[in-house]
Image (cartoon, rainbow, N blue to C red; front, side, top):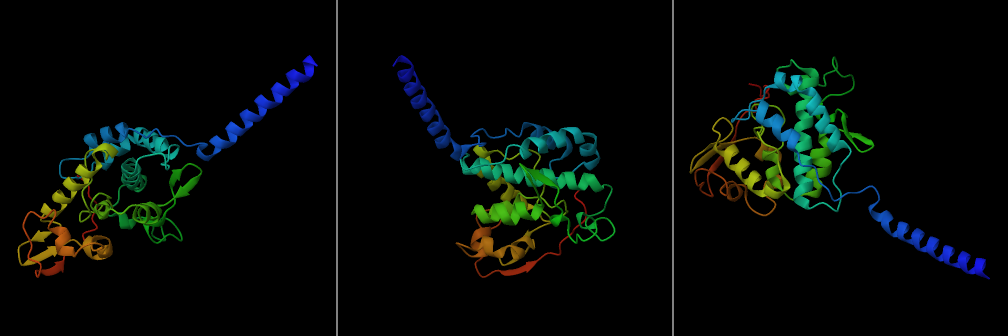
Length: 257
C-alpha cells in the first residue's frame, strides 16, 4: 500500500512537470534579453567620422571585434518578447554592420556595386543578394533584412535614412549604434541630418532637388501624407506644397574616408 501511494504521487508530480514543460514550449529558445550593441558602438566611434565617412582599413584591423559582434547578433535574433523599438534597432544595426563586413571582405573596391559581378561571385548580380549573414540557423542577404523583414514588419519610413548602402549618396553611417530606448530620437536626428546635407538634398521653398531614395521608396514616405508634407517634418527650409520636385543623380562611389 505504501509503495502504491508513493507511485501515485510520483506519477502526479511527473505529469505536472511534463505539463509545465509543454506550456513553456511556446517560448522555447527565446529570450527577452536584448543585445546592448556596445561593441558596435565602439567600432563606429573609432572608424566613422562626424560626416559618416568610413575607415574601412580600420574595420579590417578590427575584424575580430566586428565578427564577434555579428556572431552575438546571429545567436540572439529578435522575437515577440522584445519591445518593437529594440527589434528595429537590432535589424538596423545588423544591416549596417553586415554592409561594412561585406565591403571589408572585398576591399579595396571603389563601389559596393563592384561586388557581385560575374567575375567575383558567379550567378550573383547584386551585392544585396549575397547570402552571408547568419541568423540562428539561417543564412540570409541584405535584401531579406531590408525588404523581407524591416519594411514588411515595421511602419517606419525613416529606416531608409538609417540603413547604409556604403555609397556617397546613401544616408550617412551614424557613428553610434542605434538603441531601442532612444531609437525615435536617433531616427529623427538622422532625418534632419540627411535633409540638411546639400550633397544629397538641395531644398528651397519652391524647388527641391532631393535624393532618389524618396523616389525609389516613395510609397513608404507617402502612405499617410504627401511627400512634401513628409519632408517638411525634417526639412531645414519650409517647402511650399506646390514646389517643383527633381531628383539628384545617385553617386555609388564608396563612402570611405
